[in-house]
Amino acid sequence: MHTRHLTIITNANLIIMIMLSVWQLHRALSKYELIQHKPQASLTEEDLQEFEYEQTVRSISIKPQLDKLRYFIVDPAFKHHVVGVELIGINHSSHIQKPILIHLGWYPNTEAAASVINHTRGTPDIDGILYQPKGRLLRQIPTHNSWPKKISFIDLETISLALQKPIYQKIIVTKGSTLYDNVTNQNSLALGISRHICYALQFAAFGIIGIYWSKLIRRKKNVIP
Image 1 (spheres, rainbow, N blue to C red):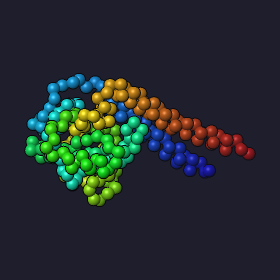
Image 2 (cartoon, rainbow, N blue to C red; image 1 turned 180 degrees about the vertical axis):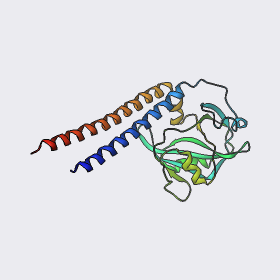
Image 3 (cartoon, rainbow, N blue to C red; image 1 turned 120 degrees about the horizontal axis):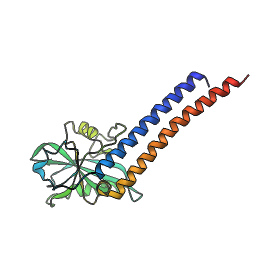
Image 4 (cartoon, helix red, strand yellow; image 1 turned 30 degrees about the horizontal axis):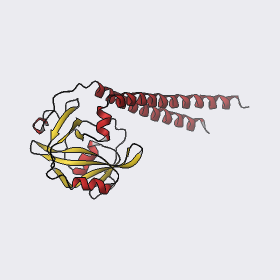
């Protein structure tokens, strides 16, 4: 292998590992911020405008007015090591002009998720939390042109482009969903922080190892007669 090629590979590996390390540290910081969150009074639909850009997690109760035809499916999604999907509904409120996303939980398949969307009329208010998804590393493109659209993770920018209009900059995560438990459970958050820091250290180590092997290969080439 030429020295120039080796340098390119080593530098590319280092850049990728640094990006992955920073991403994991960002995710750890997001979970730390959730741990620091102190419970506050629950919000209502009338408060949505005021709290769109506030950097805290707040409880909320909202009347479901879900779009029956347009919604998003996060596929795949895991719950207790079982593969399924997560349902993201599009809610409309008279108190704000933007569509609001509601995370409606995990389901074994798309058909079960669709059944929930079609049976929300007349249901009581939904209780959950206002949450801003963070820690995105890559952009994505919905894999279906028709509705429902499938996505691989919750990304407000992707969803806004799919709807061709601005959306509310937080989602409502309903009680009972896996994401709700992950966001509100202190033990899960603490374990998540430890896991993300370990991943960050691993990626940093891979970058350093790449540099070490690169120097080792160059040294061997220099001593070969």
